[in-house]
Image 1 (spheres, rainbow, N blue to C red):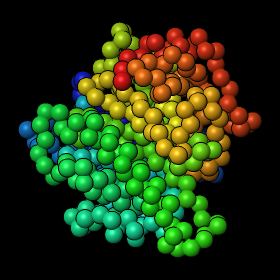
Image 2 (image 1 turned 180 degrees about the vertical axis):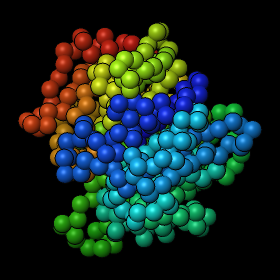
Image 3 (image 1 turned 90 degrees about the vertical axis):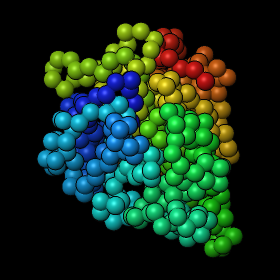
Length: 378
């Protein structure tokens, strides 16, 4: 999953086609994955982007069940289309059949949504989830994925909070605070549905109820992304972000780099796998935290619940996420989201060691220098 948000529009091709490790390349060559049994994301793809306000607030979405590497229409579209806010997703099926309606991103009105991961115990919570939402959100679901039903739950949550997803929005959309709170409440509702499984279905000792909830939602103005796992001992699916002033191609062709000419963040990228191999281009989003992009400012907040651990040195097992093909070996600077001002006073650079299954850490001072180049406020 990929997100681009910039002050200026960018050709879609510069995000999803041209970089050497673009999302198109990753659809057939996920070289950063630890799970070599499923190296492909060939079950379809989707691209969503916002156009001129004159055309309305709804995003334009193009999806296909054709593998991204084999879709000539994607190349034709991406090379002639620009946008300042783009979602892109390649799919490896976990729930739902192979169909356009199951390809991310999903939309409702001005809202756009995508998910990387799975909802734990899905076959046992789907019915209670459906029963818990209002008819209009139930009727809006077109596919059969846990991801789209999670979006329906998000829309229902927004309405319960007093914010109608159908309502026209102003210059700032629904507001980043509303989106973030609705996201957190959605995760809480999913966890509660899973916690209720024993009460409604009895003891199911072999049922895996762990969820990997890397969600992304936007209203065309602000973006909210989560990196979350419903476990105290397991690692979440990987997620990174990069910010700078210029996303520029260098030699050799296809070698893109995030340039930082000042401390501004004219461009923010969020990705499950980095688009470049430069270590200092990417920051690891902390496990069980929410990342918000508002007016080109990156905000990171912890998701504090029963699965959260405040210690930045706390080590988790990557085995579960690896088994889903959702952890990469890519390095990235890690920040501590528990700091009140959002500035990383104590940061490190964890690197997944696929052979030893452990965590190697770069020198603290080196990571601090890298983190200082990022504009982060809370």
